[in-house]
Image (tube, rainbow, N blue to C red):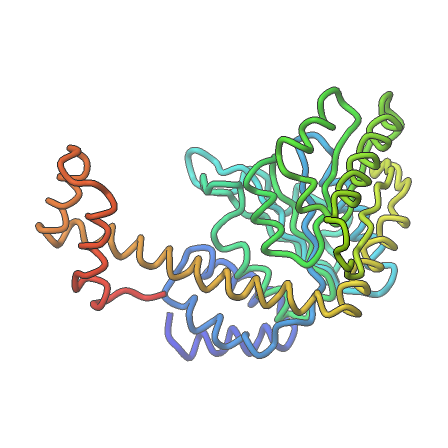
Length: 332
């Protein structure tokens, strides 16, 4: 793409063009050479959007929750960006669920921008370009950016690093309380939601979660001066019927205010930017190393030696770091 064309896209996005925004998103998803200039251009415009991660096991009703929250946000005259992470198609690598299938009532609303992204087999379920897409929505001046993930696992840690507030959504099915502990969801949740709360076991799950949270709060070392601490709410919803969603929206806003007042919002964002730097360097080095294998016989032999067990990975990594390949070519 010509630089002038990219500049025009950025200018058009700044003027409110959803078409230009979608084209820029496609460029970052494809990891084109324009990613660097795009991110550099929008960097001064970031920090407006309140970002919310919605995660939980399959079948928890996350999409209905996001749909209902979007309705409430629009009723408050706020603009909304939605990033829906879908399983990748094994044939095309694209998202199995398209933008038009999701959130049909919002599709024609100019105040809502919905983007489905494929996981592409990435560990934890978040597509590699998710953070860049969120940045574009922020630069597009969305007031809220909602990120919906797939499944339970490493994905939740990715969500925590990528958003200001994490909503963990569960359903009152057998074993979900135990799953919370196993998956480490207790450590990342800012708000717990028991969705489909009309089902049997909902009250029991809410009680279990509340007890686990109380235990977490009580484990503070004796004599430690406690900083102001967010008390994680446990809320009941029936998202498909809009039950409990106003209370969830209020809890989100309260958490945002809590983070802002105590300075934690900027602290989280600072940490996120630093972690992004490390992740980008790690990815660039790994990609460059992989590319170099086809060009550098010495490096290829090193890999063969490690694979055969004749050289330990630590010693080999030291050799790689001392080599010249890191100094030549490649882009972050």
